[in-house]
Amino acid sequence: VVDLETGGFNNATDALLEIGAVLVDFNEAGMLEIIDSQRCHIEPFAGSNIEPASLEINKIDPNHPLRPAISERDALQRVFRDIRAQMKVVDCNRAILVGHNAHFDLGFLNAAIERAEIKRSPFHPFSVFDTATLGGIAYGQTVLARATAAANIKFDAAEAHSALYDAEKTAELFCKIVNDFKPIYDNR
Figure 1 (spheres, rainbow, N blue to C red):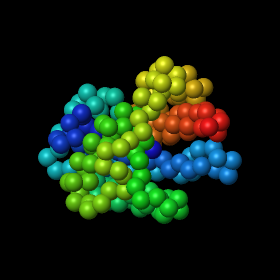
Figure 2: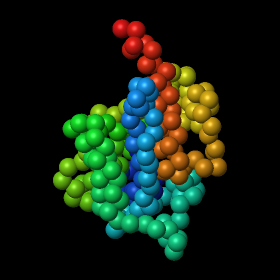
Figure 3: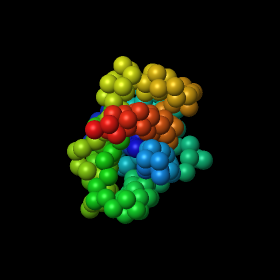
């Protein structure tokens, strides 16, 4: 499960500022659960655009001296290392990105992968699970805060728009939806 904080909406020109990633897996009871998470602050790539309106929302100060930002390449390699290790555990060839408005995150991720000249992404190039869509189906809500509320998942609006917080809440929502639909699959 991935969430990105960015400097705007254009993945070709706008900075990638933060990535949050959450690994999920099925436990012994067959229920999907969170098993690990991480976050990286990212240095804006050279010449990137950062819209002031985006910073107002995500509250990131890209130039803060105490912000432990690393390059896109280093951040992606760290995140991908953990994803690949989990893929090996579950004997999987490709990860499917789960996100809230997942194609937005996948587009930014793919643009960063290209800029960083990473040869192979662990993610499938176009397949995703989108919790905005799943939340709409399961709870009639497409906004993350509203979908989590409808799912009885605690959501703190003051913490929102941190990549790790949003990834964790998206992961909780995804796990709840998958686990709630599990009885349907068990009865087939």
